[in-house]
Image 1 (cartoon, rainbow, N blue to C red):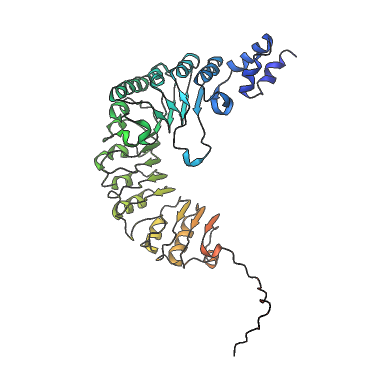
Image 2 (cartoon, rainbow, N blue to C red; image 1 turned 90 degrees about the vertical axis):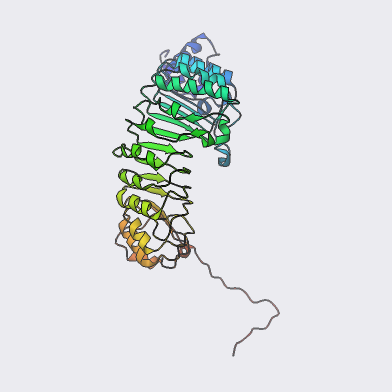
Length: 411
């Protein structure tokens, strides 16, 4: 029976296991064994009462053993509208020191919607070299002066120099969250060649104008929003054509020609939104013809596109059947929005439906060429979800005559 207690206690929530240590010495020993064998710690999910107290978080981490391989420090927003804003909970030097001291074989560190103090970032250099994932999202980094920025950059550089097995590196959030923090190529050049997923979106804090730090990398996913790269930087992406599948270069004001992106045939998702001058009909035609595996394409607010452009944004009246015929070349697309594209007829829709065999959702509000009879002409299963005018049910019911009024008979 004695040997069953550790097994029983291991079924309890981690927060209850910590409390059970206070029962007696024997339970303290049993619970200590359970905590020492814990491999993953999500503080909010497993010990929610401690997330607002850095000392309590550090205490929980200290009770875990060297088996700990994943640590998640996050605060989930109660209202999704505020999910991109930091909470008032802090990650301090005590927390990071505890992680460094106990999780000597740590592989993943995720921090979301927390306030990162300078002391915490300074202690990043002591994180183990076994790290494969570093994710800092929607956090507030305390960087009040440019001198503090120098300290933060030095700490990140040492951490990246140390982590030679890094697979995922992510720093994302709004520019105001980073204050005087500056993320530039001096930091990015330290990333190991083992990296596969790189996501950098630090708002106005991002100071990247070239991509030489991607040389010899084999990325599968790259997000680089609000950077200052130009068309001359795109050859570094072409070198990763055999591996790159997801690319986000939105809000890049200096990217005036996107044609070379067409040389990335394995792309499955592409976001070029808000590049008002860089996305033209010609460049988008090349991308659509050569990137045949595309499942998601976003060209929102690209003002130079005309009726020849492959658009999915609602309210673009210039889209016509020729656009849909070209769009049909992207055979892996699973979502198409054509709302109020009034030049589209049944011919273009039929071509689209017959070609896109993975299409799951279609939106065709305001398009007269669409009808349920059109679906019967298609020799393929229909999309699972269709949003259209004719799908809105109509109801008819009799209205009783108003008492005391005579019936009106037309001659």
